Image 1 (cartoon, rainbow, N blue to C red):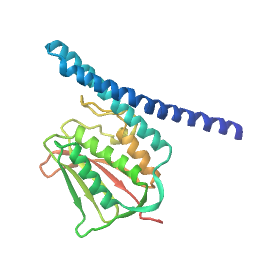
Image 2 (cartoon, rainbow, N blue to C red):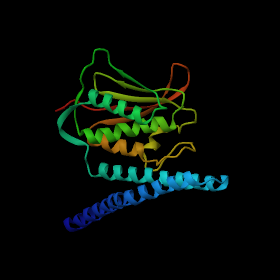
Image 3 (cartoon, one colour):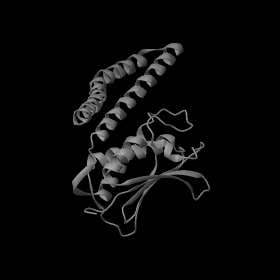
Image 4 (cartoon, one colour):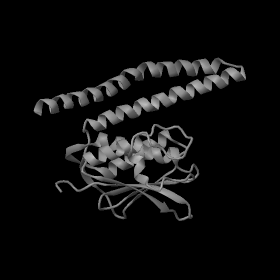
Length: 234
């Protein structure tokens, strides 16, 4: 039995390593192909040629996104979320929101910490939390209603919620979005891995992820993801 479990562990590790190594090795040539295609597209003048080049560029960008998410998933499955050192999540969230806003200038993010809150210490790996939180922001920006802001609320008891308005019907059982490659009713590009990555990383931090629909102040339907992380040494 011990030998069987050992072989099973090695097989699972080899599968993870293959996915991670393959994604990593493909990043550089894919980035090169994308850069060359962008240069070529700029030189095309015929409408049909430009249309075909745009489709190729879109396919390459989707593949690049998928590789990035596969790398994140492999890191999540390696168990990077746990940490014995506490970090200030309030400061980290502010930094991540500012960074995301600079790279997604069309998105509007409203950060709402609890009144008087100055610090939120939690025993998490900052890189792992950054991966999880950025996936939530990307999910909200990609699938949310474009003209509506993304709201990030932080409570004193350690709950972090990301809320966005939606314009398409959501599955009645929101927990299906935790599954890999499960996406809602949308034609927007995506990997279907974002929430699965968040769920795995937050679980490694001994936290929970709750998905819910909410009614926004303007009566629109909103999608909300709440992360709850326990205090250190609890």
